[in-house]
Image (cartoon, rainbow, N blue to C red; front, side, top):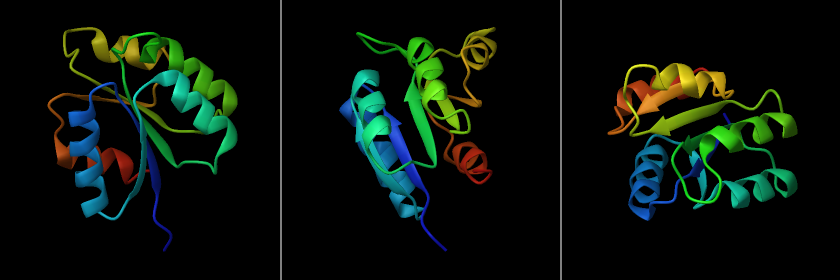
Length: 119
């Protein structure tokens, strides 16, 4: 079985490190970038990824702006919002932006793996 390739988009290197380590230990391939603009460039030119985990609060271009652009490139690409924003209505706001699912920080690894198992 081919490994699933996950793109991690987060402006905090510590979050990227932790997610990559966790996902690699569970058999996923990972690529990462620190901004949405870079993520969009990668999606335009590289081999496709199986899913994107995107931080919603980043400088320059946040996840709310980036998700619709990612979906325009590939409407079937699963994009999962990963955010510290865990207030009432934040999940709905992420889904309204086009996210396929929502994971709050700190990340519950079991929940994340359950979400990724459906891709």
